Length: 277
Image 1 (cartoon, rainbow, N blue to C red):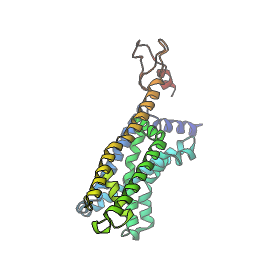
Image 2 (cartoon, helix red, strand yellow):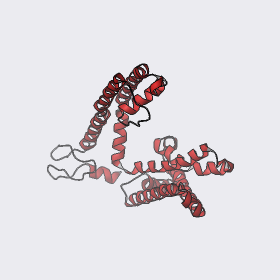
Image 3 (spheres, rainbow, N blue to C red):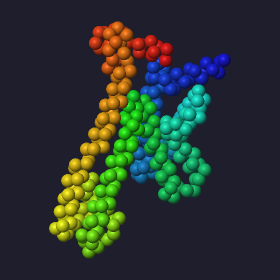
């Protein structure tokens, strides 16, 4: 019984945000995450890393042990442990602590590029911030809802770049730097995306004309994914706002955290649901 009470208390503090203790824990966690990410960035600067190596090393282990304790506590108090472990946030929590322990297992691999990549994975701690921003969750849902439309759009752009790249390979040829179709497709991608590195460029009038069409095409299609995501965001925000209905005037459209109706001033049902939650 006591164990159940402890788990319930920990769960309300760690996973909940409605209680004062839960809010204080979230603020503490945000500060620790930002501090750990700044430490990782400082560690990547060679002069600072050499001069303050010991302090950075100790600081990194303090953060790692803190996140390890948080991760184990979340597993301990979670009612569905497996669901949390394999969830998006559960995997991010795991990634935030793994690199340090991998370094202990393979201490002689410091010179390997793959180990440097594993160390950089610590920067993923910044994704832990998403958990504490309601608007980020709305954005994540909107991205998930629009993934098929974005995939279709991406596939269409990929087809266009392959066609343009192949045409330029034929028109320009190896003598003008378009040595292969993949290389020409690379030029098509940087042109359509309006990046334009300038490492290769068409020399023939026809090639320059095709490149101009590609640039105009890039400006024409660049707003398409923005429109898709904006529509999904508007839809998701409408769902969030319409979830609270006033029991007095039966009108919806309130913010998700509103306590009183913006039309008649009456109390919303969200007050009682928050108290029970």
